[in-house]
Length: 244
Image (tube, rainbow, N blue to C red; front, side, top):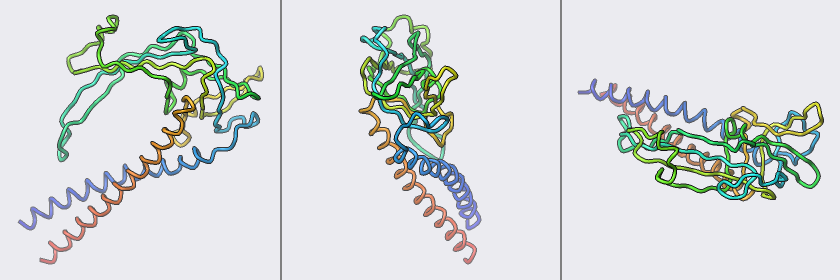
């Protein structure tokens, strides 16, 4: 019986160590990212090839009308389904998979802060950026979208359709790498670096993104402490069993 409990404790200990290591590396990255987002220098056109935060208004005209007059838009469809969590965990795990995406034919935006003109290709942020937040409509059915019925699969129990757009004069915030083209134009592009997250959002959503980061760090720290306590309990349990 003592050997049996010892084996169980060793298995749990190795599982806790693995979970701790994975979460530790992720949390350490978030902690490094935090000061870069909160203490980033004020934008300057001379910060070429640097990580920058640009705040300004969209100067591009509204040339599309989906779902309303807008400068760019994107429609995405997600398939949703559920599975049982892998042992030793219990309960249901929710899954979401992108199964359709449509971006406006032109996704280039001209931005201005009153002093500088900066260009952004939003398609690059949709593909490579870490976070996008625009005006949004969400639907939970495909009934109104007949052309998407072909994507229906048996494993998907439901669908989520999201429409995103931004319009002329909207105030936006962009985090990314500032570059200067040979013709002298300033562009901000995704960094493609996890330590320097790319962000394109309407100004009113910036604070919520930063708040999410703070909450994520706090939550991960809490779990790291629990994992440490769990590992200590396992070690003490093994020591106790070896002394009996």
